[in-house]
Amino acid sequence: FAGRITSAPIAVPQMLAAYEFALAPPREVVIVGERSTPATAGLLRTLHERFLPHTITLLLDSESRGTLTAALPPLEGMSTPDGQAAAYVCEDFACRLPVSDPSRFAELLQ
Image (tube, rainbow, N blue to C red):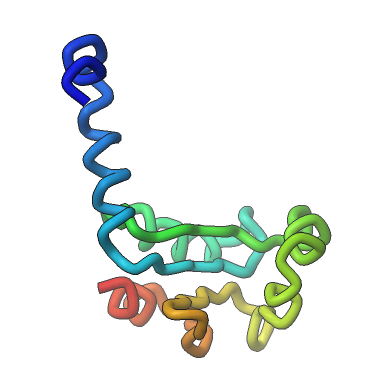
């Protein structure tokens, strides 16, 4: 990568993030809820406050649900318990129970 680093040193941090992603087991986070609600915004804020290079994130709202569930059928079963936004944290092909509380979500992200 010496040539790439010499010609585009600004790309080095992204290369390191990609390397970190390749080393760690991936984790998927699916946030279910409408982007415009305070509950969804709280979960998104909790997620975005952290550097999680090995985490893949999806927002499953009414606008994206049809497209995403067509491509990823397991998403069909993910819903908002009690009508509140929820976060599903998945690792090794298994998802934890959904959480709606941002502080509990933060614990799962550690």
